Image (cartoon, rainbow, N blue to C red):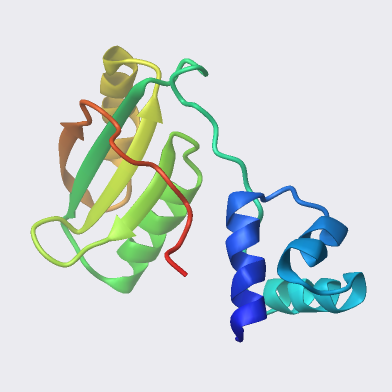
Length: 150
């Protein structure tokens, strides 16, 4: 990956919907070489998808909860089942496997505290292998970005 690839990636992070011609102009290439580089970056998995950030508050989803999950078992079958089940829940927008006190932390975006309580009782506590859920409610979003420091 060279400096031109990094310029392409920086531009895509700022403007995910940019047309290839405009992208090429911004990074100093002609259309075809830029298109080839972009296709290579996509094929190699560096560019996973282009996305847009939405304002969760304006969409009626003002509550952010970090749900720390502890598991009863740590066998491969339980871990895979949990990860598959988490991936099917739209309210869980991020999930990380952790080292330390919790086994996983999930970022949940939801309409209200009451809806989170129902989600906790109906979904989170019934995920495969879960023995404990510790919920932390965000008071304020200080920073939100998907831009990597490249």
